[in-house]
Each structure stands twice: as structure tokens, then as C-alpha cells.
Amino acid sequence: MNITEKSDSIPSVPGIYLMKDAKGNVLYVGKARSLSSRVRSYFQDQRGLSSRIQQMVLKVADIDYITTATEVEALILESNLIKKHKPRYNVMLRDDKEYPYLKLSTDEEFPGLSVVRRVKKDKARYFGPYVRVKKARETLRLIYKIFPLRQSKDNLDGSYKRRPCLNYQMGRCLAPCAGYVTREEYWKVVKEVGLFLKGRNDDLLRYLKERMKEASDNMRYEEAARIRDQTIAVESVIEKQRIVSTSLEDEDILALHREGDRATLQILFVRGGKMIGDKSFNLKEVEGIEDKEILLSFIKQYYGKNVFIPKEILIIEDIEDLPLIEKWLSEKKGVKVSISVPRRGRKRDLVIMAAKNAGYSFSIAFDSKRSEDSILEGLKSSLSLSNIPERIEAFDISNISGTTPVGSMVSFLDSKANKKGYRRFRIRGIKGADDYGMMAEVIRRRYSRLIEEGETMPDLIILDGGKGQLNTALRVLRELKVKDIDVIGIAKGEDRRGPETDMIYHPSLKKPILLPLNSPEQHLLQRIRDEAHRFAITYHRRLRNKNNLRSIIEDVSGIGKKRMHTLLTHFGSLKRLREASIEEITRISHINVRIAGELKRRIY
Image 1: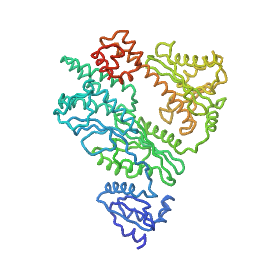
Image 2 (image 1 turned 180 degrees about the vertical axis):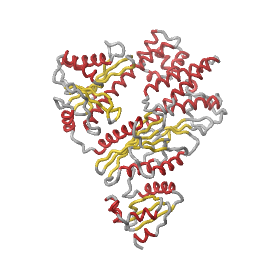
Image 3 (image 1 turned 90 degrees about the vertical axis):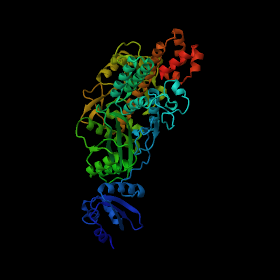
Image 4 (image 1 turned 180 degrees about the horizontal axis):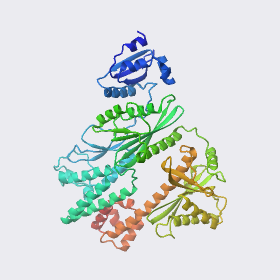
């Protein structure tokens, strides 16, 4: 029986088909609502087929098929067979990595929290994914510091198992292993952890404050103090989180960037309205494959694994079988899952952000590796600079309403970070939230020192900010009689690309410059600007932690100025004090065990 005769004998029911070559190798796996119609379409008028599929049809020597009861079953079977056979003409997702999740074991009497690699169909609750296991473990450690959740792996039923451990002594566990807490009281903590991990921090703070008031009204002052400390810790974490939605959704955002026979698919993870991470997937040999087919193949293969499925998936363009895919994912998750192509508003901005990141990831993975000289020459031309920017210095300011203000400067030589040239500045002469004044102080201190020491000046100065910061820096440089240095400012603005577009301000141009989104020049400027911001934020947090340490020590009864000075001098940061033992604290500062214990309790 030849191929045409065999295709005519296939039934008109849902199922999957496997195209094979003369040696029996699987060339392609597909699914169909009607196997007969789909398979025959390959061997009739081929003008509508892509050149890639036409080449595949020429190699087909045999066809196998498997019928299924429903189209959803066919979809699942197709994904499994693609993973098994890895056919040459299917789009393959070459990433079998299992992402880490946090599992809250709500199927147990006294739930615990752990890092896992698979999402199972059980009664536990899963949070993630986390792109790196390090981030998942950092979140786990943070939760243990804020919430008195058990850390043991025992199967607990409320009865006595052992004596309470050191975590109980430090106020970091309620000791369910020793039978010290009821299930009802412990589950209050579980509820708090769930709200925190879901990003519902407003609800969590409201709940904590209600519990603190109730404990205080009933004269349970130690419990009220513990909840107060939790509230402060949660508020500190909220400050650092980037909110992209006030409606607290779980969303995945997918976008594609392709050039020639290569493509990068980017996925952004939003959990509880907050961006928690992203991941890129690089695909080769996709020439002749439509974008929508790449996107569809990715969705089927990625969500066919044991991964968290959000309630909403945003994609950059329509795909085939969208209602079917939604039905499959909804059945897999157990609740309604929607897939949409946003056309405007916040969701459209997120898709554009994913597309920008896809372009950035593509250039890292597949760029033709233009020489650094070429990129720097491109910057000179694109930004109308007077010099090739071989030596670049970039500045950023960090403060919260003028408190603990700092400045940072990062140095790049031949487009590479020169960390020996990094500098930090603690703002001395400016009071209040005066960003322009702070920038002026940092620029003046940096370049007056270079002048005094006869050091080489940079070719390009980059400022984190718009026209205001740019004019401020230019005024200071004129006062110092510094000439022949290019200066630009970079600030976020809004244009047709979206609200997070990089606007580059040049002293001699009225309108900002917009570089091509995925150009190496744009990526280099982003990298420099982000590094200056990171360096400033890191320094600012370190100083704030030191100030917080002073505040915490001052609040502990029994510690005077002399002992406070000793503690600050020796430890210098909350982190070092947290790591110190009670014995070390008493030995260094000559305070008793009770006061040292109170100090340790307050910093956790």
C-alpha cells in the first residue's frame, strides 16, 4: 500500500499521526480533530505548505496513527510522543530543566515549607517557579526569619515528639514537635505564609495588625511584640518588591524574537501581581516555521511538564487551537485558564516588555559577536558623540525621601566592567530629597579629585536621569573647566514602544534619542545603567542596615551608649550580628545572657 492509499484509509476521528522515513525514523508528530482530513492535506495541493514541510513530505515512507476519544487526549498524546521521539521537523523545546518551587504542605496537620522540583496533584500549595534555586532558598530563609514556621521534616500530629530546639528559644518556631501549640494557632501562621507568598501583602499586614491588637488587648504582650516585629519585617520586604499589577494576578507572559533560522522565546513570571523572574528558550533551525507555530509548540511542550500553570497567559500573537489549549490547561490546573493577546493597557505593556527581553536574550545567545570596537563606534555615531567611548563612567543616586542618600559610579573600559574603577559616595552637603543637588555633589567630588591627581578623564559620562540631571552635571563640569567629555542622561519615558522606553538625552538635541530596541549599542547602555543602579542600591541598603542596627540596639533595655558603641564597632551590620552567637555577644560587650537573648530576638 502506497502513502496515498494509506492516507485514504485513515479514519475521520481525533488522534495523532506519525510521519516516518524509509528507515522508520519519526520525522513529524501531529494531532488532528479529523485524522483523515489532516493527513490527506499533506499529499494533495502542497502549494499552501511551507518549504520545510514540503521537504518533509518528500521523505515520508510510512504513516502511523493512534485514535483518541477527544481532541484534548490527542493534544496530550502528541506532546508525549514529541518528547519521546524528538522528530526533526517538529519545533523542539530543548530545555528539560525542572524549575524549583516552594511547597507549603497544607496536606499535613502542621504544614512545613520546602523547595521542590515538581508540582504534584496533591493538597499542598505550590509557589513559583523560581528561575534559580538560590532565589527559592533565599525566600525560604526569609520566611523562616519572619514567620515561626516549623523547619523540621517530622510527620507531626500535635503530640509530643521531642524537646523544643534552638529555633523555639529564639522565637523562630512555635514548637509543634513538642506539643506547645494547637493546630488552630499554628494554622494562623500558615495563613500568614500563604498570603506572603501569594503577594497579598496588604491583606497580610491588615491581618497581622488585627492579631497584634487582639493580643495586646488581652495582655499577651510578648505575642503582640512578636507580631509587631513580623509586621516591620514584611513592610521592609514590600519596599523592595516590584509591583506590576495591583490586581494580584498570577500570569505568564510569552513573546518571541527571531532572525533567520533562529529564535528566542521569552517567558516572564508574574505571581501575586509581582514580577518574580524570567526565562529564555533558544531555538535553532526554525526557518520556514511561522511564529504562531513556534509559540503553539512551546505552550504545548512547556505546560505539558509538571510546572505551575497560572490563571492567565498573555501571548504576543494569536495561535491555532486556542480554545482547545485553554480547555486542556484548565483541566490540567482544575480551574479556568485563559490565554489572550492584549491589544492595549498594562497587559500589552507586559507583552512588549517580554518582547524586548526576548531580543536582548537573542543577542546574547546568537549575536554574530560584533567586535567591541564596532559597538563603541556604533555608539559614537548613534549618539552624536565627539569621541569613541572607550572609557565610560556612569552615575546613579539612591535614597528614600532624602534619607541615607548615596551616589555610585561604575567604570567601563572597552565596554567591559572595570570594577577596580568603581566608586561610592556618601552624600554630605545636601539635606532632603534634592536629587539634582546630590548629583551635583557627586560629579564635583569625582572630577575635582581627578583634576587634582592629574588622572585621565573618561570619554563618556552617563547619568541616570533626564534633562534636569544632565544640565546639573554640565553646569558643574563647566565650573571645573572640564572640556571635551561627552555627557548623556538616560531616563524612562513613554512612546509607541511602551511606558518603559529608554530615552537618551544629549546636550545639543531637543528631543531624546531612541536606539533600536535589540541593538548591541542599546544593550550595552542598559547594562551600564543597570550596573550603576545595582551598585548604588547595594550601598544604600548597607548603610540603612547599619542605621537600623543602631535603632534596634537603642531599643533594647540594659544597653547604654558605651555598649552600643562596642556592638556597632565590632559587628557593624545586622547580618553579622544575626550570625553571632549569644556567647559571642556577651563576651564582646560584657552584657548578660538575658539582654543578649533579647537583642537576638529583636533582630530575627
